[in-house]
Structure formats: C-alpha cells, structure tokens
Image 1 (tube, one colour):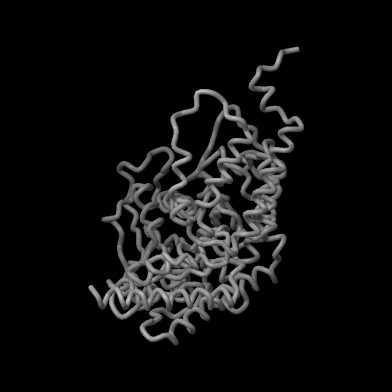
Image 2: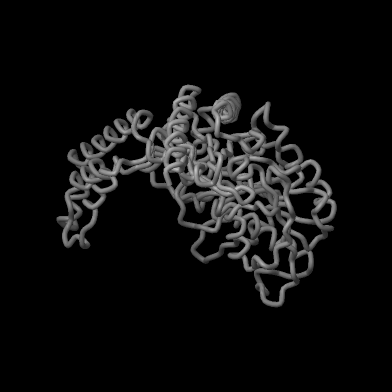
Length: 472
C-alpha cells in the first residue's frame, strides 16, 4: 500500500477537518445573523485591515485553521452587505436561505455537469428547471436552457446562436467558414442597450460601428416606429428592464413584426424578465414569446446566490452549433449533457441552488417576492418625492428608481453622503446628460421599514450636500 505523504495526511478528512468545516459553517451563520444590521459598506478600519492579506507567496503550508481565521477576522468585515436588506447599488440580489444552503451542500459534492455521466443530479435538475422556466415565462415548448455564470455570458450565447442561424439562412456555415468573407449581418438595438450587449457584439466580431442604433423615448424604451425595415439578415436586440429606469421595450408591438420579417430577436432580461412570472407585472413582458433567445439572471431578481445566469433559446440546433463541442474522450448520453448548451465544460453545478430557490419559493413565492420589490421601489419614489429637493425621474414600473437633486453637484454630493453614512448603499449614473442617483431594489429581505430608514439617510445626506454646496 502506498504510503501517505505528510501533505496527504494533513488534508485527509479526519476529526480535525470535521471541526474545521463545522467552524467555517458556524462563522458563516454568524455572518448571516448580523448582515441585516451591520454597515452596508465596510468601515475605513475594515478596509485598512486588508493589509493583513498582503504577503509574499507562502513557502510552506499554512494550517487550515489559520486560513479560516484570517478570512473571518479580516475578510468578513471587508465585505459589502449585498446579502442584507439595504443594498440598492448595482442590481445585486440577496440570497434566499434555501438556495444559499443548497449551494453550501453542493460545494461538498463539487459537481461539474458537462456530461450526464459526470453528474446525473446536475443533468436531471437542469432538465427539470429548464421546463419550469419555460412555464414561468410562458415561452415556446421548443425552448432550451444553458446555465451560465450571468447575463453577460447569456447574452453572448444568445447572440452566438443568432449569428449561426442568420448566416446559415444565407448559405454560410459559420463553423466551417468562420467570419472572414461571411455575408454581412445587421445588428439593431436601442441606444440604451446594456454594456454587456456591446461587449457581446464586439466579442462576436460584429463591431460597434456596425450597430444600427434606434432612438428611445424618455424612459429608455426603443421607439417602435424608428426601427428600420427588417429582414433575415437582422439581429434585433431588445431589453426587459432598462438598467437605469427599469422600463421594458414594447415587445407586443415589435416582436411579431420582426419575427415575420425573418429577424432573430434577442431579449436582454437580466433582472426584468422575472416580471413575466408575476401576475400583476406580466403585462410588461407581453409578446416576448415571439423572440428567439432570452438572457436572465438568477442572482438578481430571483435571489439565488451569485454566479447564476440563464440563456433560453427556441432554436436548439443553432445554440448547439454555435457552442459545439467534440472530442474522442467525450461520453454522451440519451439524457442532458450540459456542455452542449454553454461555452464551458468545466463549470460547477450552479443549477443546484437555482433549483433549490425555485423549489423553495414556488410560483406563489416568486410572485410575492418579485412584486414586493416593485412595491418597495414605489415606496422609495413616494417617500423621496415628498422631500423638497428630490425629484424622481422615471415611471417606477419595476424595481428601479432614478433620483435627481437640485443640481448635478448636489446630486453627486448627496450620493456620496449616503455612501459615507453606510446605512444603505446606492450608486450613480447619467440620465439625459444629468447626474442621477440610481436605486435598485433587489433583495427578498427589504421591508417597508428598511426603505423608510434608508430615506432618512438620503434626507440627512441631502442636507449635508446642500450645506457643502453653499459654502464652496
């Protein structure tokens, strides 16, 4: 029998390692218990204490207990409390407890569902959740899903499938002939397209200068009457949830006409597509069933733990062809082999926490949670509008609020003041050339009291900003 090395002896799952896992679990739970009350952004001391991680590459092993101690002592205080109830900066969701616990369990399983033989549980859950998503969003039965890291990758996959299909209509095999000398496709999208769409366009070789831009209305929605004539050379990109205003393009008016013209329609629905699963909000997504591909996150509105994106596509052949994978060592099955629906082979089974979150909430829970975010955003708008000096610029149809103060300078200083107070956290943006504060309500945990508490922080920050602006 081969003798164990000293390192193997150290790493084996003996009683001391069991204590290590229990300790890490306990520390994680203690973090969760305090995350709703702590400062939303790290204190200056916590940021300064990150110096404890600065060192040369260790020459020898560090005891596992010391590794966990360092993370808890200096890492935990330097986290941003996106898991809490008062983070309204980027569109970053919290995490439903069942999903977080499932991810924790799945970490020990360490599954990679590229092939069914690598992870039968991963394959089974991906197949099941795919059918659930089709039902929730009322999509065509032919729709397939790829479970990726986020909407950045989901948009890339959807547009890759679009490129393959539209070129194949023109007699060009993308996989054989490549992009050089390929027939030119037309990319049409609104001027408020998200940056991840632009990233995908450049990564796929289309080039920003080839985009046919469509002007938008005062809420950032594509103006249907300004969309150019479409044909089967076109890829039309729309959005469910403008990243600033939260507005939705008029899918009902646009999609069927585009479909009949032979255009491929892709919908970037990173956080907004979930409106389609809510009885009182589903009108916002009427008509999306006429599209060809849809991108959405789990870790935003649905509140799965981070690293959970979904690409949905009604053209399985186009998606698989665009993301094709082959090799003599690959073992395919008559069940789902996940590698054919994503660019990666080596990806963790993020489907486990996605399944757990949907299973835990059910249709009723998803409806209540997502509509609750809309209600809290509307509450933000109402309470802030009642304070002199604040103006809400958007129609609050989903979870976004755009706030402006008397001047750009006061708006900027108010935002910075809110960030420094650390009661909540918000970010800034530009809207029609003016500075704005962007509020994104994305957590299951945010209550009416959290909103009112945050509004008081806004009011205090605004008073400080007015004073600073007056004395300068």
